[in-house]
Image 1 (cartoon, rainbow, N blue to C red):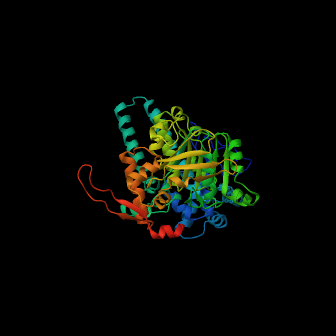
Image 2 (spheres, one colour):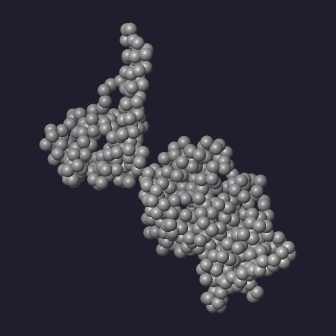
Image 3 (tube, rainbow, N blue to C red):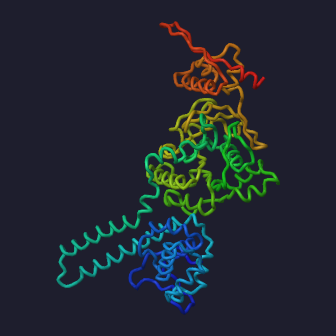
Length: 510
């Protein structure tokens, strides 16, 4: 397979000129493999032509033979005819161009290239960028030649350059309408049809841990079970279990796991949950990348989306974040990573990220609520994440606490959970479940009483009380609790609203 670098192509052992290139001169930017991929995708699926046409514009292909094939494809598409290599061959033969492009064998070679048609947009963008660079290079060469002519007028040359720059800008805008508009929608479509009301990937509408179109970041010190928790979510996405932490998980078509940090240890952790009966599901639904990526995501923001497209994955797991970027503390690189994250999300890829906390917080008391500024690295990593789960506890301790620091909808927890390190499972401590606490409270609970129980005793602050109040309100809305309104009073007087488990809730569990 030819290289995808910007080098001159090797001349094949054919007598025809279908590999003829642009005129000699300075090294020309091009990508033959991208050109072959786009043409092959268009022959395989004629609908791809309408997608890549606005991106390519005019005169985008470097090889004249490829430009000829492209124009034949456009002609067939306009007439509503098939674009398979047999029909393309007939048209080129009628035009007298068949042997110039390499004959039927080369057309079938293009159509047989093993590329996913879903990648055609990315390949078309590569072709367009190379064509733009060639045009700019030609303009620069012409400017140098004009400046070296006897009696050259600087003002006249500057005027010509300005005119060419304006024309190039207008041409780029005109030919790039697909690139500039394909992600733009009207306001109604944006509000109603972009998935804002879609079911969560993990959790419920009221308590969403992972929302579609947003990334989930699981943070914690080494050894607190981040990977154990993530693997359960992955296996649930693959259909090997239905819930994680008693919350539903939506299915995935295919998961790409970037095992950059100690892949052998990751494999050993996964093995706890894998049985012989799971072989077909794991072979079809899980792809694992082992070790470092070809480039850091801050250097190549398209790489994450390209990896997902290459492996036909709709879910990517980044294990771990520090291995995906050059450095964690540079704000500029963090923004570049966020661009990589958003490009993948925009393509419909769901992202789960495993990350570390700052070392100074590793020994924080169990149950103490952490904050987002305790996440290691630039603040832009958590600012761009849709949801952040923070796991606190001691390394290797089966009992840890989950804190939901950034929420798509209602906050879950804090949840005291227990890892079973032998089976690779995690269970919730029922004594910290608001529904269980309310059910076991004979005289009901006020929001302050529930808050005190959730934080493990002591005097809850205002935020704790408000969070408890929201928990109770959701139980009322779901029919699992009733509310007895309080009585207003002066200082030291009055009576707080009290909540009771409903008869339905008591019957359901009794």
